[in-house]
Length: 162
Image 1 (cartoon, rainbow, N blue to C red):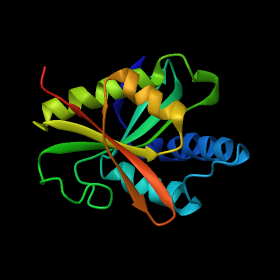
Image 2 (image 1 turned 60 degrees about the vertical axis):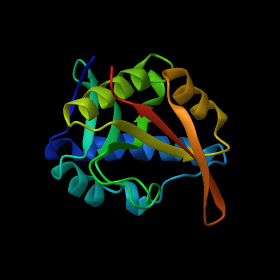
Image 3 (image 1 turned 90 degrees about the vertical axis):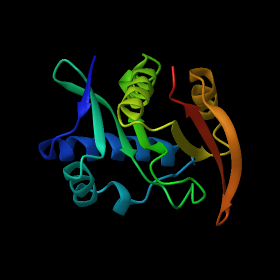
Image 4 (image 1 turned 120 degrees about the horizontal axis):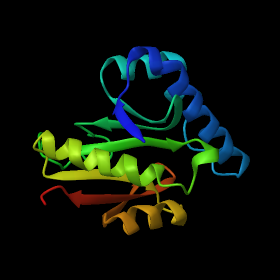
């Protein structure tokens, strides 16, 4: 599996992966991302800014994630320059439970170290136990649960030092 920073030309496929994941979640009664968040225009903007990273198996894009260096919305108390933040981790359905998430999380940890960020942080809807288990099994520790509007989010962190 090859993971790398996405190119702007990858934006349509990244949007497709995100939209497929969003559709699957919505079909299960667990809607997550708005169309504006994962539309091609926004994805192109974020990809051009170097935020998306993609996992390929051969020529096929099998997973994506957004790796940011700030997150004032979910982590307002975190000092600038101390953390990297994972958002919009999505795996093609055919590749779920085949290690793609673990590969992307490992890659994010290495990138955070390279960028001299002491922590890798992320959040997820608090009632998504399967996702929380994935993060905890990887080594993330629950930092806290925060309320944003009507939704509770579990915040996780992982030190990047070896």
